[in-house]
Length: 192
Image (cartoon, rainbow, N blue to C red; front, side, top):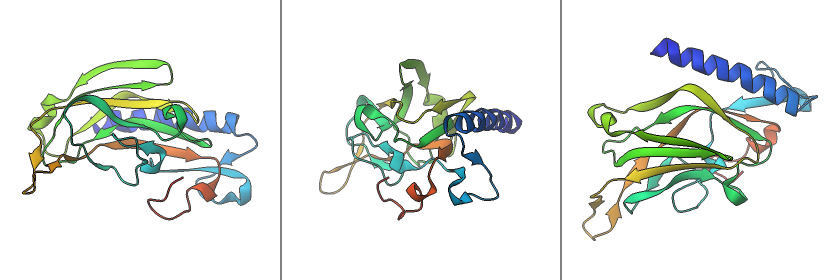
């Protein structure tokens, strides 16, 4: 399984480098010099600030308090029309669910005008800190819409005051390419 993940990530990385070099020409990729004096584009982890949470608020971390059950949007692009911000491209290979209690039992997603079928996650309940790794990764292009939908199964916990506490993490796995490094050098958690 580990070898398959490495192969998928390597193939996606090669595809992303080719796409970014073509789209962001004359910029090139130099992993030894991410600052590049304005001559290079770079890469980083997938930043939660590129997405909105289930309530439509821009994320600053992957942890969300989902307080309603049923079919709903879990993560979406943060710009108008659920688009990824300009000058960012995302190489997406899967999702991690590092939760003690897992309430999301099914997901489906849409990238631009391409819809992808449902994935049943109930088998994950048997594992500690599971992840879903795609056989082939996806590139979410700049200014392309992205929606991740999930089915949240109840009942959700409540605290002593009766407030619903549906804390969960859905972490996108892969990396993000950026055209300008100054957009990723801000304060941690700050809007992009």
